[in-house]
Image (cartoon, rainbow over all chains, first blue to last red):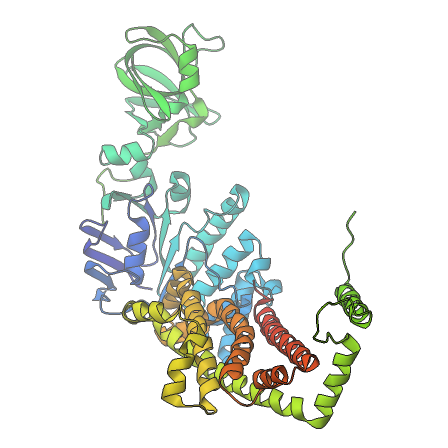
Length: 358
Length: 251
């Protein structure tokens, strides 16, 4: 399996994209709609014109048309051939390569077994469920033993439990086959679960390429931070374990309790929507409850963004519009905030701080 | 509650219609001087015409013309349609010309072709060719261009060459559209051949009708009309059946 390198890729939407995908790696192309994720997958597959260079194992493949690049491409809508049954769909990439019928048959059998869909062999796509279609499409893409696998939001059309299940299976399969893979999604959680590394795209530009934890805890710029939900990221001054999977960390003078069972915590992060604001002192134990001063109020499309100063910390909270309207919040007012314990993410200092952007 | 009507029930209104026809004719309920033959007389005439071979010969003459013209026109239409549907530049070049020719009714060509070809067997065959060619071409192009580009792209990533994609993906997916064109034109070919034979050709069902008209043989005219109706229906049903057979498993 090759490594993939994109050099100075320019296209209608992409602007000077440089990216190295390592051998056997699963890289997630993450970004909002229209960021150019699918375009990059199309460029790797040779399905669209571009300037710049795509290299497989250091060899430029720009001159190769799509049908000679040996790329397995799983399309967002799966695009099973409706006029062929499942076995013929899987066999398609083999039979166009002049393989003998016996070879094709045994390979199809092997894939049907691998994807656990032997019972579907003679069915037509219209009689398959979403999850079954998914497996057939993946089997079809893998049948000609591609050098590279491109997955374009392959789970977006499925219901949540099926998608979650297939996600795990897909990841395991990818590791077992050791196939270099680019996985396109706009879902941060999916990206974090799947990725060896995440490449964050915005408006056709690569903003950051890093391990999932690093993208979350060390967003390289505001665009990345905004895309992952503008989390509050706090450096910890100290930390000590309280036992039973919880730990106390000190951030800017505030003692914060976090769910963590490991050694030490370097940074913590939580999304604006995971801060709750109360006008009066909330009842219950005093864990993760702090006094704060409102420093700014800014309505956005989804939430009202409220700037807070608690101790020495500047925090950003997000509140649904209807809740904001029920309360009487104003700049300069003193409020109480609650950090939702289970939503706090922690970052152990396992990795070097230097961002490895290749 | 509505019950599902069994297929055989379609025959009932036909039987009632024939009975009424027989009754009206027998009781001389139609005013005017010309005879209005009852159904039974028409059936008898059908028998005489068949037995004497007159109907068979004329029918065969029409059938051969329709089959040759229709097959040639369809094959040419599908072939040109494939090229136009697949190669964008050829489509852009030819489309304006085709658009100009397409609306001309097939019979509109008759005066021109009579001068160019003369009155011989090639005349009706050419008319049928034209009558089939343009609509089948049009439907083939539409069918091919309507195939979702994703199917083509996915076939390409699977290693298929353009020729393979056209043969194994695009044409099968365009088949329903092509069959629609064939089905419509199969019936149309019969309507056109009758008209052509009535105007210009001395043999065939249309010519037989014209001769019957000059002899005021209304029963023969009605026999011819029934044969025509049955053939139109049979041709259309044949392609309907073929279309269903080809696509029933997957669409």
